[in-house]
Image (cartoon, rainbow, N blue to C red; front, side, top):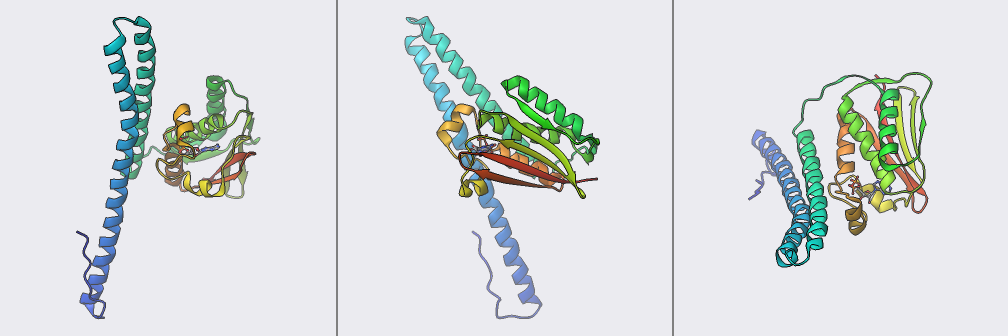
Length: 252
Ligand code: ADP
């Protein structure tokens, strides 16, 4: 029970203590609610692939001996769903670690080289054209290289999932900030969705993102990584035209 104490009539020290107690109580309740919501969502997300796996196991049991092709098809789906669950659990663990305040390894990161490396592997993996625009000077920040790489992967992977044309990846310096922009010419996002996409498990079109293997956790992780680096992430989008994600990091 989350009871509050009513000492609002008291202006003395006890009144002050009661006020802080109520404030603390509210914060704890919010924390527990968020945690509860997370567990509920996570269980729900894991149940779907599990149900699919179970139904294919049953299919093999019923028909496998008479129709060997059923075994092959079923195993393919089971394999795919297992990968999905693995990816989801991996992402959940990443989020939990971030929220527990994990220790990062901060050192100098050469951004030009990092962007080159990540854009090359995404271009190769998904056979997509990525227009990389780098400044002449080598931009360096103090950060966690693995985390920054993960951030770029999330944004570029989304851009390739939700668009079909070339993707722009830009790096530039403006004043004492470093900007990284990922721009696609894809389906875009409505205004309400633009606010919600950073929330845990939020997906604009659940059915479609299930096909693309989406979990709704990518952008939540991306935002958390940017905050770990004391930066900001913004989205600009026009439905039917495309989306730009902009990461603003303090230049060290
Ligand atoms: P997911 O794993 O589903 O991609 P994310 O947290 O990375 O999860 O993204 C949340 C949702 O935001 C996606 O399901 C998708 O609907 C939307 N989204 C993300 N990136 C883009 C993009 N570049 N263009 C259009 N929609 C996007």
